[in-house]
Length: 348
Length: 77
Image (cartoon, rainbow over all chains, first blue to last red; front, side, top):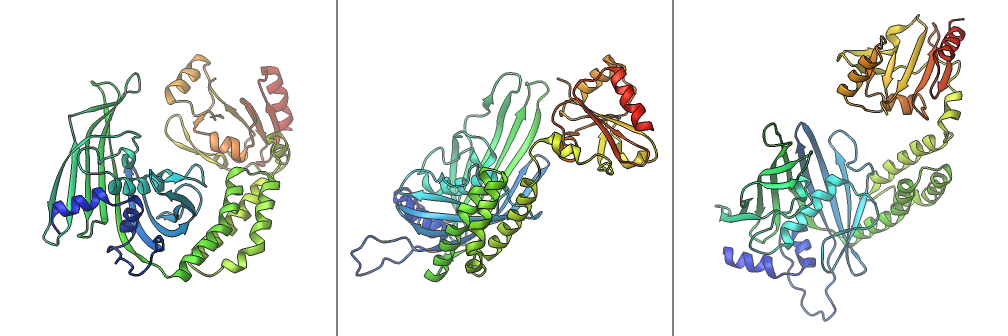
């Protein structure tokens, strides 16, 4: 496929089929003999995501299921970070993809920033047309459009590589006392012969502070598609049902930590959890069960800290380890055998 | 000991220590310990811990020197 044809392909297809092409390795063959409006098939994709911001590194794998939904598709994603946590604090998330526009985070608010960045980046990479401004600051945590000068190349395997470099030198992101400038930006997108995104990288250098003593920070986001393909209707149905079962429970957990709310979620959960112990989201069901249990423990405590503190009287003081002003670590247990006066204070 | 539970910067804490000529050991970044383990409601809050390591008193809000001494005497018993 020539570059020109690829460009036409990228610029002209509708959003829905674009999303599809991101999820699938090859374009769908046209279905012959059906007059009905073509329904998007169910698909699954697994992406590896690596984000760095200065010293901070976050790695996770996100599995995205695309299932049919009224007016478009729904993406149900689940992500697990390499350190065992969920980016965003909850094991499952979703967004509705309508006919046009950017994905709209619908159910879980706020969505995990990292997963969101990854999804929006991939989405943006496919939906913007040719020319300047494919790049969007989202992947490196800047909520603004960044104009780039783009070059394209095709490698020996027929893979299209699009490179965008910051156009027009430094950009002032923010002025004033906490000045922030973008001094370098590069995006690299790797697309297969069929036009679907396989890998992408964004890198930015940010300068903080005034010109004389600015500190610089490197930020990167790398995403790589590990697998993608259509899924059987049965699996799609299982995802849909498990999602519909889990969503209200997680929503309650997110909204409030009152004991009444947690107990309500628990009731909803107990009713149907057996039906979803198998299938593609079985692990998430287990994780939500654990989340419910620990939320209940926290919610069962009295809300008023004064009341909670009364329960501490006469009991061993909880040990802790904190850094001293001199940089040395101090434990409460270092002072065993002494009467202690521990004063918590704030400057204001 | 004194624990800063408001995430003030080191410079501000040093200023505070100098201004008030504090002698105690000063620990920083104690918001997690303070609010989760020690159930703080307002600052300052002083806890008294006896020789055995048990919590024996808690005074929330500003205390005069005399009040603090009284509570400390109780803890020393």
